[in-house]
Image 1 (cartoon, helix red, strand yellow):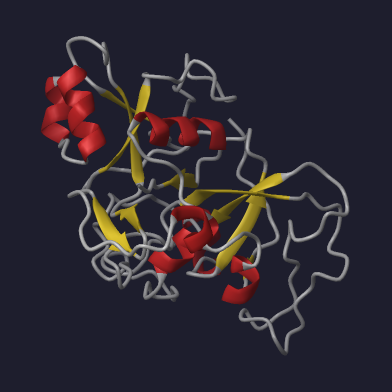
Image 2 (image 1 turned 120 degrees about the horizontal axis):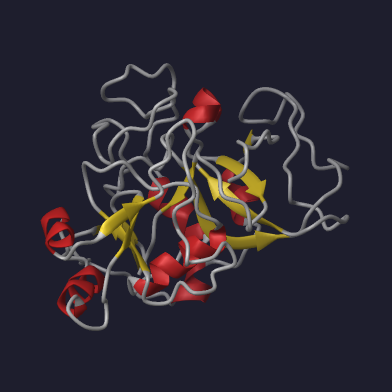
Length: 278
């Protein structure tokens, strides 16, 4: 379990955030959707999970719980179905939380037909997983991690947080909120908690960097009103990283619909989660 990251963060202009990857139309196809499964919302050409993921271990998924897995993949499984099947939620990290994803390894090995990502309200979202484990949990559920572009489209309309009122606004305090419990923290598409609560892994990898070089916003053009480095935008060296989006409880008002951070895909953090898409 890694310590909380101490990154350079920037609420990057949408054009910069989206320039990191090809358009969603290229990746997904250009046909718009009109209907999604009950656990997701329509966002352009994809169905984005309505809630941040809770990750579950389902016993005997190919046998006695085959019907439960089918419900999960259809987006119809409820908390009562999981309880009936003896499923256990993973990644419920407190101040001294323990990594409980094994035998699903940080590398994504041994995860097939083991852990499943669900989009359910009123549950504390799961944390502490690596990018590889999040990827596997989505795949087992018949979904995938969203691209950065898809995530950006779905977050539109979510308020940029000010002070956390502890009730309805996006959660930028120190304690995670149950998914969907902050009524005002919802996007135009109907996706909850894309800002605050947990940072969210997206699919995209970017080149690493060893310094800011020329990727620095001036106070005159930065949406945050100050000079910060857009980490990961340069191929000047360093290990590749993965984008996380939106902000989490540990970074407070630095989160927002344009917040971008690059972290190592093999690390798990207590303030990073994810949601899936179809």
